[in-house]
Amino acid sequence: MRLDKWITSQVAISRKDLKKKLKTSPAIVNGEKISDPGFQVAEGDEVIFEGERIGKTGFVYYLFHKPKGVVCAAEDARSETVFSIVPQSPKKDLFTVGRLDKDTEGLLLITNDGALSHAMLSPRRHVAKTYFLKTKDPIPKEAVLLFEEGVDIGDEKKTLPARLEILEDQKSALLTITEGRYHQVKRMMEKAGSPLYYLKRISMGEFVLEETLPLGAYRTLREDELELVKKYKGDTV
Ligand code: URA
Image (cartoon, rainbow, N blue to C red):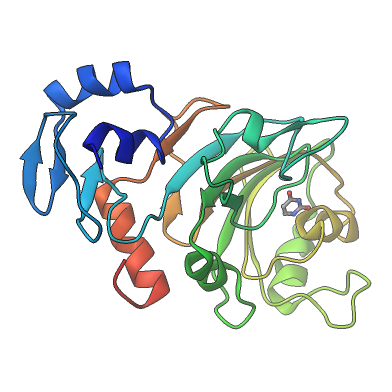
């Protein structure tokens, strides 16, 4: 198959734009730099384009800065979905790694790699997720200990120990949790007597939302992040 066809079948770029792009940032096929869009790629070849490995595995990874109002669903009759911004793959196999509520902003991984998703979300792995949050009223200091010890939010079990760092204005904080219960942060903050009005996920495991990625923008994972993918999956990608 032609290199341009191979790449455009999995990455959101037109063949025309790809042709231009390859001149300045060639694809790497089996370790060799290739700028010719007509180069023939064979089954089993490894193709890397802009740091994304799309050869041997066919896996696609995006990091998305989700804005408010967008839902993490394949389709939704009323709301804009993540996939009206991040292009679904031709195979329609991309999904979000976990979910953020409609009114939550922040880091969302999007992939077709079920093993990565499992590794990030498995309750046994306790992958840390850090949120920046804002409340109308000052957050009581007792919330720090409450969250450290685990809090009853109406589920069968208390939450696992979580770290709350109240920021200087007392009405914003960083909260790190290692579970992914339904509306967990909202429910924890309500329990602490400080309902939220703003929530943003800033990291998930070692994947971090950089300040330079604008709200609503997405990008493919960098080489160092693809190494993290390997690490979380515990195998080779
Ligand atoms: N906790 C919440 O309450 N909402 C989110 O979107 C994520 C974590």
